[in-house]
Amino acid sequence: MNADSRVPFKFKLGQRTDERIHSAIYAAIVTHQLRPATALQETALAEAFGVSRTIIRKVLQRLEHEKLVVILPNKGARVARPTTDEGRQVFEARHAIESELVRLVARKHDERGVQQLRSIVAEETKAQAANDKRRRVQLSGDFHSTLAELAGNSVLAGFVQELVSRTSLIIALYEVPGTVPCSCDEHTGIIDAIASSNEALAIERMSHHLKHVESQVDLSQSTGGVDFMSLFSSALGKRA
Amino acid sequence: MNADSRVPFKFKLGQRTDERIHSAIYAAIVTHQLRPATALQETALAEAFGVSRTIIRKVLQRLEHEKLVVILPNKGARVARPTTDEGRQVFEARHAIESELVRLVARKHDERGVQQLRSIVAEETKAQAANDKRRRVQLSGDFHSTLAELAGNSVLAGFVQELVSRTSLIIALYEVPGTVPCSCDEHTGIIDAIASSNEALAIERMSHHLKHVESQVDLSQSTGGVDFMSLFSSALGKRA
DNA sequence: ATGTTCCACATTGTATACAGTAATGTTGGA
DNA sequence: TCCAACATTACTGTATACAATGTGGAACAT
Image (tube, rainbow over all chains, first blue to last red; front, side):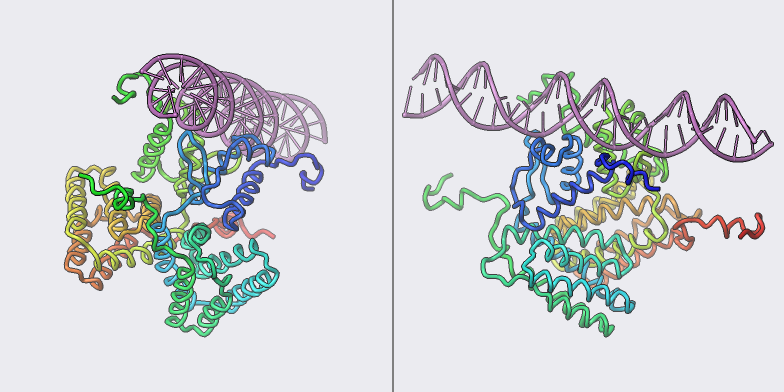
């Protein structure tokens, strides 16, 4: 009795369209198919998705809110290019929030939740074996936000989701060349600690996991406004 | 040399308009001038602000992201009406994040930052004396997000800002009648603990402060979907 | 050759027109 | 009197037309 099934040509069922387009662009960004600083032209996207600029603008504004896109007035939207300082802040925020989350989950976990986490990691391992980067990034994010959901706090879950996607932008920009993909083992270790209700161990392992991810990027360079004065001081000679 | 000063009739300097309108509606919501569940009709707002629905829609979508507004497809926007469960989660999130923040600030505070906080509380006390609710809410929020800025983490500062404004919605809905306005003294106590670099005390006082705010609301009622069947069962008689 | 001015183009910003949808009121029949 | 189908209405959802803005290049003067 669903009307949609009888109207095969009505593709644009309002509300669903934005969601579809948002997911597509979102996925493209976090999987590095759209690299930081890539221009996102409204007309081009509108044609690509077969909708008007209205919808695209709506999606871009949402992505701006999610900090994955930057919109410069009268100049258009680009994939965000977080500074190293922002990167440091994101990791610090993740540490603060996710430490608390594993504490909560370790304290009041149930068998079902643990199974849920394990199945995600299982999929993650499969995706890694299949070299499916897009799916791996998705699942790695799922692990962290599912943890938040299991803590019974969707507010924190939302924050974590945002931080995880921002992390992938940071990795895109500052990843040091020879890094191993990811560490499903570390995820498993965290789950084990939770399953045994060992709060301290779970926090320790989460902390270690985040430090490990952070160690794969080089945030030492200063990107927030280069100081030409000092940079070229030797070449220019001292000026008043 | 500013072009604007020579074009007095060009009121709508692009970009600034949305910001103005957003601030106006935002302030109205957090100060309870617009109560939860209030309908926000696009046309009415467009006329009120002298712009087209395009701008209003943009602002409403932003407010939806900030969780102050809910948009129901084809039904329009309303001021959000957070459930008691959401309220609990917001306080839990604030506890997790702000505990970490005071720890960071107590560890590496400077004189300038402490003065900044004290001046906010001073203004707050003045606003309380003048019974200026709007300004009080604004300043109380400023205290918490400034704390986040002083911790050198604008990512967490953003989260706190959002949580503070959501808190005011929760207060609007669940505040128990005979509550004292707010506790500038508690803010001062937190500052003192920070100024003396007493991490543990600062965290303790922040924790106490948040608990105090939470104690002013009644989140015991279950708001997630009223069951009319059981509610009116005695009045209706039992039905199959 | 270099620097400046101005124009044309491309792209975003805003308003409006039109289409789609949900809620309400109304009418016809049993 | 009650119910159901329909019509009305008021709103949101989308597309498009138009205005404003920024950018790059060509022409010109120095």
